[in-house]
View (cartoon, rainbow, N blue to C red):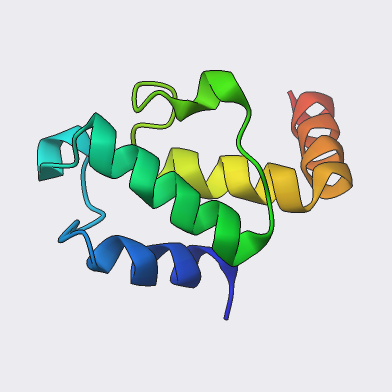
Length: 87
């Protein structure tokens, strides 16, 4: 199961449709922290303190990108370089 699919599966337990920002779907700051704890357990990662704010990771896309970066830091770095080279 890929990262995005796992995240969507966990989000579904919060009633999030994953189509808009988390706050627009009723996820408050407390449930957001609970969500991040589940993500840390599921992926064996640890969120940086500044990322524990729902405004820093407001959506599924942002959460997927951040977790992918934590799981595969070299892949995220090379993708950034590839994008910069294409510009």
